[in-house]
Length: 329
Image 1 (spheres, one colour):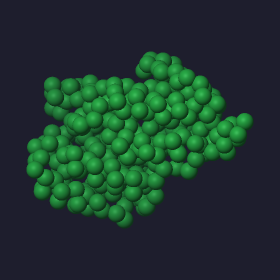
Image 2 (tube, one colour; image 1 turned 90 degrees about the vertical axis):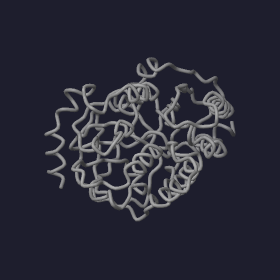
Image 3 (cartoon, helix red, strand yellow; image 1 turned 45 degrees about the vertical axis):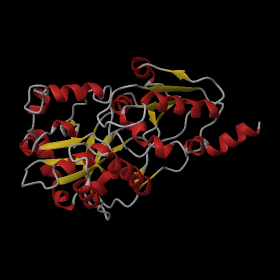
Image 4 (cartoon, one colour; image 1 turned 90 degrees about the horizontal axis):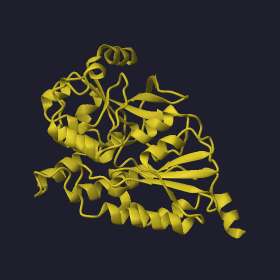
């Protein structure tokens, strides 16, 4: 199976040669690609990383031999709600291993799972918090009540930077991106003593190779993106990246590895998950009055709650003691 996956990845050069000259590209997709910037910055790889919104009909599903879906939970669920049955498509689709409970049983023989792999994480002397696009914004109603407890692992005396981007996002919502950013900023500033240094995208890229800096993504359970441009940038610079949450019940067998750079890579697994939560969302969509909407608000709310149940956050890494000691001083 691993040899077959590698063969398919090597055979499909069309994606790499003609990325923007393919039948999946149109004005709608270009608009969404812009909305997702910089998460939509291209990351070229034989496994064809792409966002699921490029696939508009069943005919598109056969266009690539192998596809790595960069989406987080909202995009993965939307993809399978639009295509609940594979219909004998030949393509293999890779989804984040920590979201495999959202994959329909009918799809699992044609789905592989992936996880980003890097050097063992160890905390550093300063932090850069980043929140992109749908990431924090979708999950914020669930996360904002927990953020102060979560921040206790970080030394309040440490210098802090932040990359908070305001972009229109794919999944329409009823709350304001700017208000959420203000609330997140207030939470960070309440914990850390020094003023927060807000960065642009270019300033963030310039810091990616600093050995004393830890990047901390605030999309802790991969609500919005499974693999975003910030992470691919960090992997190209051997930066320190704090792990996000994991689906502990994932039982897939490791099939092999695809290298990235600087000791980073993609681990690929079979799609084996004891939980199968897709059917409940499909049933909910069929009953929904919002049949034309992408992920109606009730489904989004239930999805956020399910992620909180399924995906557990990593234990604090060497920060709690330091934080308590700093406060005692």
